[in-house]
Figure (cartoon, helix red, strand yellow):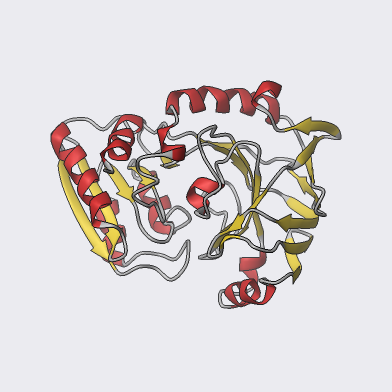
Length: 312
């Protein structure tokens, strides 16, 4: 049953009787998920609607204009779509209009009843506040792993964001499952080796090594390099932008091959390519691909920092 996850969405988003709730799905969204969300909202006493579209071809691709318009006219939008709407102008415009948005790309029936979505969003919110206090004045982060990651991010003038699942004020947006700290870096240089999972690839059976200069990818190596290059080339140069540095903080999330949950796994780092226009960046690319890195060591302004709940 997917009712557990549906109830969690309503709880974390503080959905109230009389609110209008729009559920945006596509033809690949499991019917049980859209139905459970619909029933959960209806049982609260909401005016609830389901709008079904054709699946997008990539994360960050804009939905049809009719969907974007409908998103502007709801109190809450819940989007268990195949591809993410988080990094779209439709989502940005809706939050600017005061809409609360839950983005749940690629969520499965299993994810609706176990794993990251079962975490206490209030606990994650409190933890994120502590992490933010530690990170907010850091101007340089270096990420290192035994597999060869050694990349430095210039964060001067940049602001950390918190994705906690708690979204009860107008104009907020969150993933569910939630649980990450993330930032759009000013610059990035070095190499990062994705060894967990990658958007569009699932869990990797072989790592991908990506070299970065002045915040843009200049080379990709590994078994899956050609596929990744073709995905980026189909969009253009902006797809090679280092869009995000993220840190997973959800203690219940597991590496399952679905980036929606994978990037929230505690003790991991993720680096994203492409669009970062919705969280302080300056690149509108129409694509956003996250790569999860396992067992990283961070250096915060030169100070070694092991990712651990005990460190905060």
